[in-house]
Length: 233
Ligand code: ATP
Image (cartoon, rainbow, N blue to C red; front, side):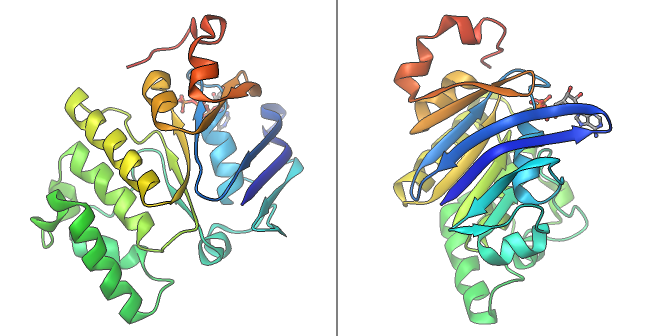
């Protein structure tokens, strides 16, 4: 479904991501793990159209989408849950969700709202609450629900467990498992390597802007050499 080949992205003269190659197949949950500053967000944002790569290519469902705008990618079925959530705090939960479904028909948006109410019971009780009043865990769930409203073929998530209390970290990883059971395709950036390796089919390890290892959770979790500098949450 997604093929990234030789992707390099620079901030000025500095290459924050070098020659990254990865694939995500339909129905797979893929983790992207690595320490602070490894280039995980840069890679995700380069795929999602928020950053323009200096070299390499991104192919989505067989089409070359390198450098496409986020709007075009969203319409093609690729949605991003950005780092720090970025929900609209002055708008209600329902309004945030409707914005997430802006690329869909009115009927599709209405059924999407019903689906989100079912999947996120905590949001259902706060439908008319301004999103700025949500707790961190609720806000994260809203950010994920908003992205799901576009009915993406591929959902990218940037550090969904960041800054959450341990019990809410569990909620996020349980949700990833539920989405996997529903057959959805996910590419998830996480610093919590242990939990992400458990939740994913495969993972890529980034360090200093390069992919240094890839494999299943079982293959990677034994690699102490890769994780000596990790905070596993
Ligand atoms: P974190 O977990 O801290 O978000 P990350 O693995 O997502 O880390 P990136 O945010 O992709 O890493 O950053 C990779 C490198 O690029 C870091 O050295 C960072 O300082 C640098 N960087 C990130 N954004 C910018 C920017 N806008 N301008 C210049 N350098 C940047």
